[in-house]
Length: 301
Image 1 (cartoon, rainbow, N blue to C red):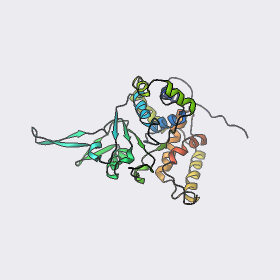
Image 2 (image 1 turned 180 degrees about the horizontal axis):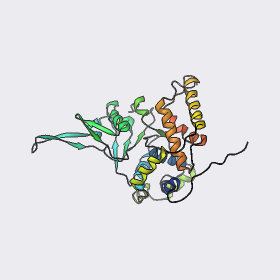
Image 3 (image 1 turned 90 degrees about the horizontal axis):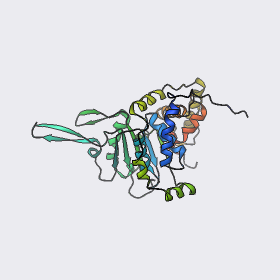
Image 4 (image 1 turned 135 degrees about the horizontal axis):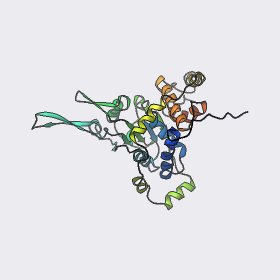
């Protein structure tokens, strides 16, 4: 079977793949042995999505979020989700000022360009819901007033495996707001040896210089939507989506939102790979992470 060579974009300072590669190199020095997961994380950001990381504690989820904020010079806030967390702890609260006899809104940590929602499934559904409007509309409503969030706005949420004690399941409406779900997993023996022998990863993150301006990031996010989609590629995506709905392999198939997420993620992956359009290989690269939290195998499968 002949191997098809993908056409690539012209290299140069304006080449998106060339702009992104230094970021990937820096991230790979922090999170060792996970190049594919790091590329997926960056693709998620470029596609203007949100990222869910499901894994055991201590495998680098928080470090990854902090490193992403550092290399792109994004404002960063972390919220530790707990069972007593309230929506106001995330969004903010209005406080009455006696000198003006008016309420003044004090913004919460959600007003950041990269928000780390740590252990999101340890909070109650009511607290989890504080993110819903923000993730979809990129704005929040408090006390009848609407406040725009910074641009870009990227949520990295971590959750522990659902069988762990003290966790609440994420509602489907919230899961669908995440463009991708990834798992970092344990490092391999060589990578773990490197972690043991080297300095604290937190020190390396603190030393990371900004490698991309916010303006460049916004331009790249805009460029993702312009990556070419052929009719044949759209036929391929529709066939995949139809299979999830009609095969009986899954309890429910991909929703239209999920199908759009698959295309958008594939566009970001193609752009990062230097391709001049989206190919089936790009769809296949992002398919597991786009569908991991959206598709549930049917009973007996």
